[in-house]
Length: 295
Ligand code: DIR
Ligand code: MN
Ligand code: MN
Ligand code: MN
Image (cartoon, rainbow, N blue to C red):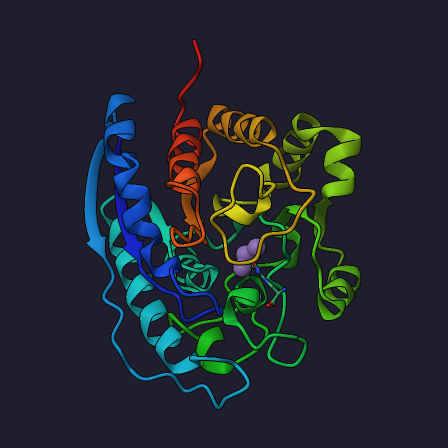
């Protein structure tokens, strides 16, 4: 089995500098070796080039033109990986890059499922966003909501259906996001459910919910889902998060199902980190997703 890895050194989707160095931090923490030790062939395609197009900061959605450009390139790269029959593993970069990853994979899966592991919902539109940061909008964008140029990347929209997504770890939702979740009946396991049901039941339910109606499942993994005790190197930490063990369990259980068809790990910011703790954690978690076991 071949994994094709691509880095996206993007920081234009949010306001803290340094998340563009996320792919380097994850590579330095040994992601290639970790996966090779599990028996995979790794094809590291390097990073998507981010052109300095100048920040169009005056618009209410910050840097939208540059983000559209990068996501077009990423979608194209992911599409090629899929055509080759390889597994796309995308390293961020801020979460705005999920727009491009999903645009690439959804060409191959017309009933694409998505597991969104995140402290946030990323369901804002330019109208509901309190920040104007596009990293708070990628899930809404993929559902066909918001700025047209972003929504139409790949030449079609929407990429996802409301009933094919599951959010896990949410604890910071904006008012417009809460309204959308209620209106559309989006499946969300907030931290309340994580505490109450346990991660094991959540993953079992998630798989049961998605398995029969989807033809592929993308894992969009925002490191800020974890408690900042474990993942301090993120731009928007929120206390009261998922633990290290719960997260390993979730990924080990997903590995057992063999249903995950693409993945991205985003929001690792080495400038805000403690000696690459979050980069190393990411590599460990990638190991679990690809079948690593203690014994
Ligand atoms: C916030 C933060 N909801 C926003 N979003 C983040 O700016 O829209 N998502 N950090 O991961
Ligand atoms: Mn987040
Ligand atoms: Mn985010
Ligand atoms: Mn996110």
